[in-house]
Image (cartoon, rainbow over all chains, first blue to last red; front, side, top):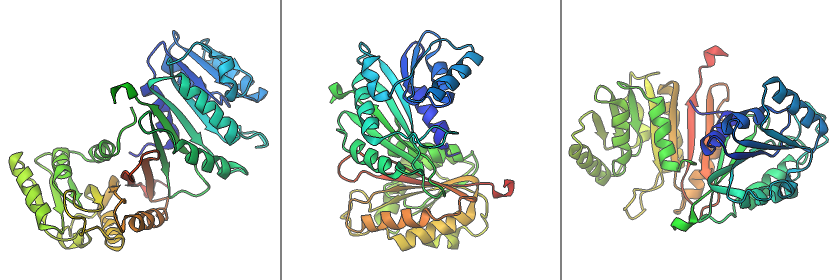
Length: 192
Length: 192
């Protein structure tokens, strides 16, 4: 009945994205979200999928190939360099998804860092269409995770409420630091 | 795109409730939720609506009358006495909704208190069907509100995760202490 975190994250992106639109997978990891995003945009849309780890890019490419999906562009770089790749997409980005933490199945030595995460989010907010959504799935059980969680809640909680809605969604009675969601929707501030 | 708090609360109750079932409005206030619940159960179901304030019972009765709704039973008593009224509904309660804070439009002198709220929630959890949901809309901007908020998050965050899912849903970038949701779903622990 109550949607779990990953299905809720996917639902938000799917609702925000129309066929033919552009979305970003900020941390493609093993490619599962990339596939979901590619289905949301359809073959006439485009998915830009970032990851700093070569293994992630390779795993995602293999999963795309196995699914005969060709409208994703995999970028072996950090998401905070998004402006080097999306230059003319102002107000055209339908959504983005971040999985914050470490690459599942890896040794947890490479983790996302709050300063880069926030820089990436701010750059993508500038690209986001009205009604578009940035969804962060926040894993924070690893060393450094709590700091990233606190920084995100603090900084994103300060976003101007006339321009953005910032939702926190998570289960509070589970052990072992289950992930939770912070989702940011761009509002139509011209209506205000 | 991101559902606001009140529509999300109503959606949860509507999803949990089938026509003909029983639900509780723990704080009928001015009756707006009571109407929503009556529509969810349909005329073959039953809504028990509690409030400690006579004005709330009168306002709700007037709203029900204006809508020609007759399958709600209004109870001028505190929700923590729910077991005096629902005695044989074990596993039959589809849902309940609490608006925690004070009666809108009143002088804020009568507020919900955490010890009674938690007693009421615990009694309703015992009545709840598997898949049923208790939705608390928590207003906490008034004196005493922060204490109730903290007590709820603390106590409900300790509910056994094998038996219950406890979701927190709220916007974190809004001024003036906007309400947020705590929703509790009863899981089928016999499947575990």
